[in-house]
Image (cartoon, rainbow, N blue to C red; front, side, top):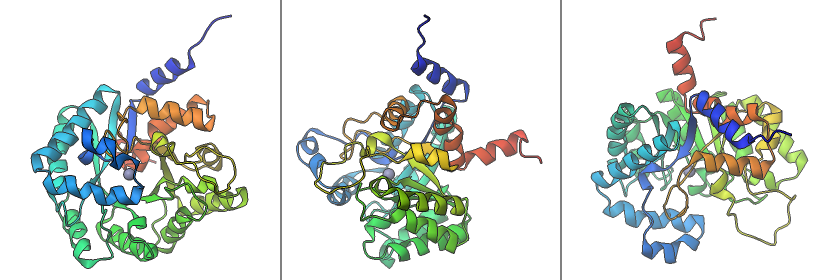
Length: 338
Ligand SMILES: [Zn+2]
């Protein structure tokens, strides 16, 4: 019998395929965990953490944001990632300071051979016209590659939030990435809403759902309806395995599942799935290093996907597709001539 090491074999193939693509992160707030917030805030609910990060953003300088993003890029490179997308905060607290830092980081990323894309993170929502202005200004800088969205922060107005996002996407001709279904509960139906809104606005094939964890908490009939709807909408997905595997125990009954995007079902439904690290060493994920090997290992263990062909696509090609780099590269190499 000859021993084989499927994990090493998989890593070698990913390296040969061009390296990992980290399709979802928040580099501007990376490395901001400290002794104090490690004691208390890390145990709070997601919605409280959204407010807490204001403290950091109020104090942080352009230099701080530059340092966070550049450190993340250096570490990503060292860990075998060759392309990545980071959401960057844009709101009345931080203004455009983090976006300016991302602009400088783009030049730095190019110098170390990383394909670095930027999306907007609007933690204060966009229904309030005062907050919306910052998103408009960020898009006018030309730094933003993808319009990011977090409908959950505009509670009760999620549909209107998405309408604004899609109008902007059409005006600026941008792809859209939307945080949906993060809480691992069947009362959330945001993936379905996103698929419907994508078709309503005619933006099929240009929209990516980030997380879609709660989809796994619904029954099989509903899940498969949403998969079909997602196929019709050309909706793609990004799973961030360690981001939600820490979902808290509750007494709410649901089909047995791990707290992860149901990737095992999605790949069988011809849906494109990419992978991301999400937060790195901050109050959301204090222990996360952003190592894509760890993310991929969690994904395959939590979903029982052992097929190398599927895993390599998730780790490389699909990431390039959802961050908008796949078409660019093929245009350059002429692969899309037909
Ligand atoms: Zn995120």
